[in-house]
Amino acid sequence: MKKSATAKKATPARKAAAAKKAPAKKAAAVKKVTVKKVTAKKVTAKKVSTKKAITKKPAVAPEKATAAVKGASPVKTVTSKPLTAESRTALVRRARRINRELAEVFPYAHPELDFDNPFQLLVATVLSAQTTDLRVNQTTPALFTKYPTPEDLAAANPEEVEEILRPCGFFRAKTKSVMGLSKSLVENHGGEVPGRLEDLVKLPGVGRKTAFVVLGNAYGRPGITVDTHFQRLVRRWQWTEQTDPDKIEAEIGALFPKSDWTDLSHHVIWHGRRICHARKPACGACPIAPLCPAYGEGETDPEKAKKLLKYEKGGFPGQRLKPPQSYLDAGGKPAPPLGAG
Image 1: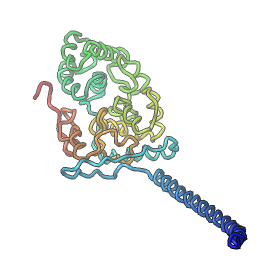
Image 2: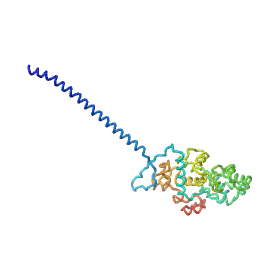
Image 3: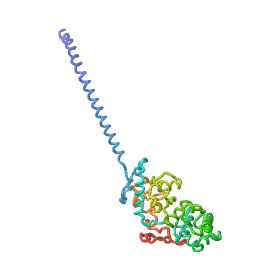
Image 4: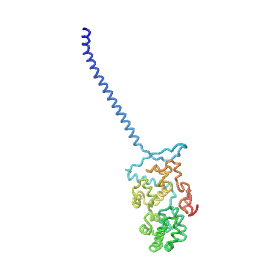
């Protein structure tokens, strides 16, 4: 009986002691949970900041292409496009720098149609529609030998002219155009090619592109030649979003001094024909890769890209049978005559 009474008395004391310990344990547990939550927040914050830092780091096209290591697959370079919010000043600077870079690559750039006078250049440019300058250059020697002046071509037999122009494609329509413009030159301009844009565009088969080729290269009057290569590249470089040739001409003209227009046309067209092709650009061999928002659309491996180069850059003949001496001095080769090889 005494033992049981003693046990009963001890029980409340034990309970009180246990009660005192319980809040302390709860407080410790709460403290641990809080610490864990704070630590977790800190870790999450670190991860987020790290991700942000990685996202902000831009990837840029390499300044110079390097050859791939033998037996290893080429490393793919991921590039970020320039911000669509590029300022007007930044766009002008980038566009002009690209032109300067291309001027160093193609210091001998010239019109790739063979001509000895404004009349020959005018006719050759009209014939170059829907075909290559090379094909025109291979065809015009026979045409100009037989019909050297506007008077001769205006009075020619259409069937004979068609037969000469057959290799150029669309030979019937082109015969009509060159004979029509020859007749107009004789009747309205004394057999001379006018040196004004408004007169040139009134001739049969002559648009602004053809007119600017003649004005810039036969008369030294600045003009932008918006051909298919020019259109493709200026959009690829994000100089403009326009698709209409006249609007492209206006927007690009506003980025450059007027004195640069003719040479700019040559630089862009040459780059489009030799390196920046429509289907598979040679990005790994491109001299303006760091400035190009479209870098990576084509072959980026330098060795593979070299195999895509055309004309003198790839060691092949150019488009002219009679190229300027500066082109030959730079390693360019004249094109073969029609029917050769």
